[in-house]
Image 1 (tube, rainbow over the protein chains, first blue to last red):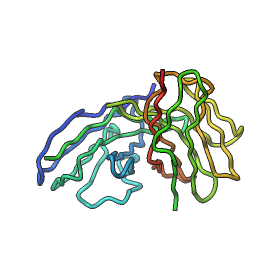
Image 2: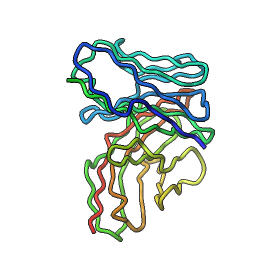
Image 3: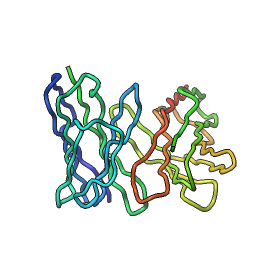
Image 4: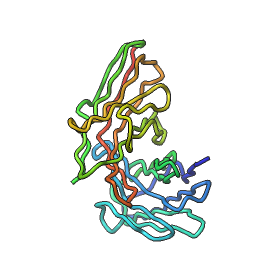
Length: 111
Length: 114
């Protein structure tokens, strides 16, 4: 059964700091996508990794980056945090049924 | 460019009544269409999808959606609403390509009144 673990679940940072979020697919799915959810902008696609390669990217500044490891775990990094980066960050895997299965998210608060 | 519209920010319905949450889309070609639900402090949960075939798609928790190509709509429906259906609902489209990114609507908050 597909499953996604995201750590940490909650995070508080201050402006200018950097942060790394983690996403671990339980069953080693090769495709991992990241989304940002904010009250103002809604759900927006950040990027997708497939077999350790970024193959699709949304319209976000270069401060947002990511990577994927050989075990399919993915990390997302945001440098020089801004107040507007406060959001719920969601990770999703693509199942064999062509669905995206989402993790519980990491709630980032930037003070 | 792809886009998804959910024209209603809020939908209120009495328990036991039928509910409809509207969604229209704009995309080149034939899209994959999805509905997701989000409960407070939770991630998105998959409800149903349309890829091809029968225009009426049945999903989880008694929900169904009707794909209408001429109206480019994919409205979510349920014959009898439950209080536990109260949540935030998102319509999403994935353009028919190798990429896995979804374009989401702005969401509709459904409140089922006891």
